[in-house]
Length: 129
Image 1 (cartoon, rainbow, N blue to C red):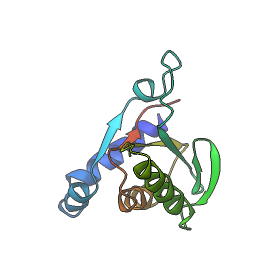
Image 2: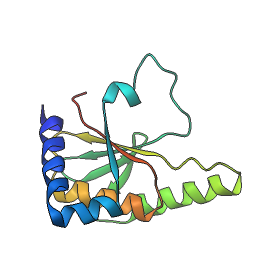
Image 3: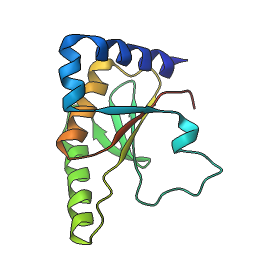
Image 4: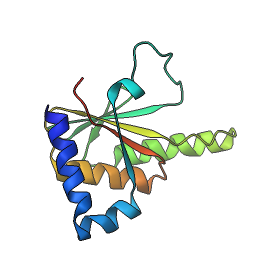
């Protein structure tokens, strides 16, 4: 329910003119958890899942990776993408997995950091775990 509320807030924000410009700059796809993290599917070994908690702590594929206030995650993702490019992989998809009631500002900052790291597409899980 909390993630649905977050998705509703994000949808409202996207409908406002100020946020529409941001949405064009940093497009985000809302996805169902089962479409991305289904236990029935074999996990994609190149998929990057960024977890964010209500207190702004971040994880990358379940490994703690600093907070929204520091640039650690952005640096790590950029390094991963650079390494992938050197080996011929172009996969840059990132899935955001919110944990609990995440502040809208934190989510927006995370999306901005991911976009600046050249992540695309950026997907946001919209439903409960």
